[in-house]
Length: 309
Ligand code: PSU
Ligand code: MN
Image 1 (cartoon, rainbow, N blue to C red):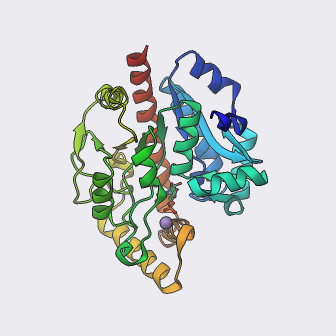
Image 2 (cartoon, helix red, strand yellow):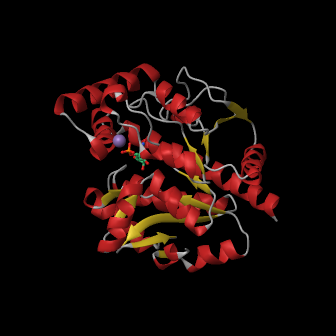
């Protein structure tokens, strides 16, 4: 037991914050290497860290670097992941032991970031969008490992909902089966990443970071395994026009099906395609919602740390 510590490398700043019981927010790195182009990816990742700090918490960007499960990256490490882009292996739960053994780099997905955050003792994690049940999953069985992780690993994930590249209805059904509560921050409607609306509803509307932190604290007290999902709508001024983005997503999904894109390639393919066919306008929305989530996650982490000490 505890052998995972041989693979874990926590930055001095993050370790000090954890030791002192200060709020810490984990951040993922697939979004850096696979989710956005260089140099916007590096710029965004660094700004996200700044926003977490401005809201009273310490940022801990997570990645696998040279086989080490790193918590808290330097600016050089973030730049390295951003420049290397798609050449960094997209690392989910199944990839972690292989990359750690071979001493390779990995950009951690929501699932892998949750695992590493939990190893470090971090319970709040902010990102853009999570993986979910893909459209057509009833035949392809393409269901993101992110959902299984939410079912078993005790980390709260703050996101802007999920893109409608997924089947949002099936994603909610899956989370329900797995016992994962989906909370809406100041909304009853599930946000769909680029838009504040989706036509689906969250399980519970919560109106303050304190309310969200309390719910999570109670889950911890009860010893119930797994995380919680907080969905935070993109700010109105950055939201995209619903019919426009829906049509573009349909186009991307159709092309992925025609090309027979499968497995871990599916999500990055769709993200990239959408970016191309919206000629970059979706990138600005993406960046803004990531900032918005980082601020909320930090505020929740601050509340949670006050409740724990
Ligand atoms: N959805 C997004 N942006 C992303 C991802 C998903 O809108 O960057 C990334 C996240 O890292 C997520 C991963 O954990 O893709 C899910 O991949 P898959 O569907 O292959 O599990
Ligand atoms: Mn998949």
